[in-house]
Length: 207
Ligand SMILES: C[S@@+](CC[C@H](N)C(=O)[O-])C[C@H]1O[C@@H](n2cnc3c(N)ncnc32)[C@H](O)[C@@H]1O
Image 1: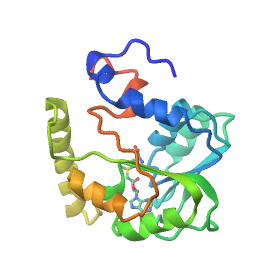
Image 2: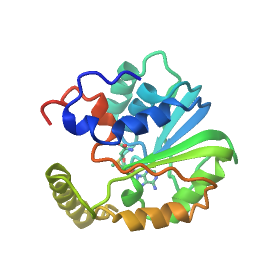
Image 3: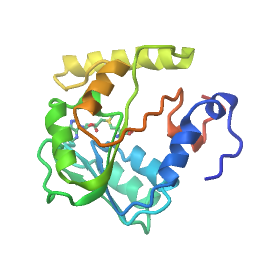
């Protein structure tokens, strides 16, 4: 992966290491749970060494947004990428039908985390890879990260008032407890001040 023209903050973060790890994967069938507008799918298409297909699922309470379909057609033209409306807690896939399952920035959006992750593990083949990307609120945070946490707190409060599940940013320990309960065989953990998306973002010098 080429890492040209990066601001210092991104270079000194672990974002590059995460991208390299993803680049070392030669994946087959991939599931992105709680995909939203498919931002993490875009990251995967830029970082993965190889993949056969990617399916993004989300419960899309008002149906799959038309803009998503239009923008996905533009962004992922010619690629084997699809979006389905589906509850992560009740996946309509056979056991062990994916080589990689991912969930990005969405653990704190799930009403029943154990159930959703249990389903994702069920559809992951033995020896497959479970990728979790999530922000945390404690430890040493940069000013930008602290601002992001405060902004997120505001959004989560509004969603909660509207009756939509949206927890405050979890602590690092909470995220580790959640992933520990998955009982994965090996665990690689990367703490980064920047998301891997920042490597490719057009606004990386303005942010
Ligand atoms: C922050 S957004 C997605 C972010 C995206 N994965 C990314 O990396 O940018 C969280 C998403 O979780 C979805 N969601 C919440 N509960 C869900 C569930 N039970 N099943 C599927 N999707 C769910 C919401 O609809 C929302 O689109």
